[in-house]
Length: 98
Image 1: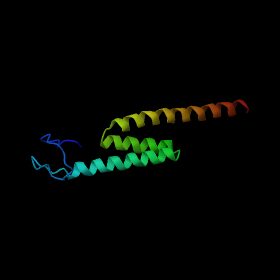
Image 2: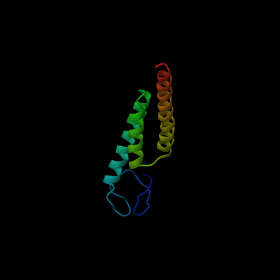
Image 3: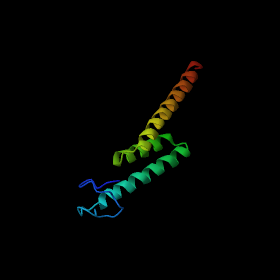
Image 4: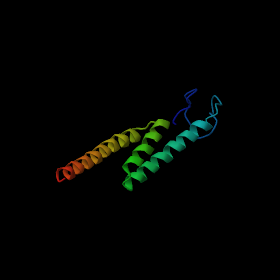
C-alpha cells in the first residue's frame, strides 16, 4: 500500500494513517497475507507443483493485485495448459496401442 485508501496520504508503514487517523491494520494484514501466499506460490512453482502454485497465486491476487502476480498467473495458466495437453497426448498415444 502506497497511500491511505481513505485520504490518499502517503503510507508510512504505521497501522494508523498520520493524516486522517484511519485504522489500516486490516489492510496491512491482508497485504502481508497476499505477499506470503505469493511467496508460497513461487516455492510451489520451483518444486514443480503447478496446480498448487496457480491456486496460491490466484489466492494472493484476490487479496492484492500486483503486476508480478498477474504475470505469474498468466505464466502458470500456460504451464498448466501445456501439462494438460502433454497428458492428453500421452493418453492418446497409449490408447492407440490398445
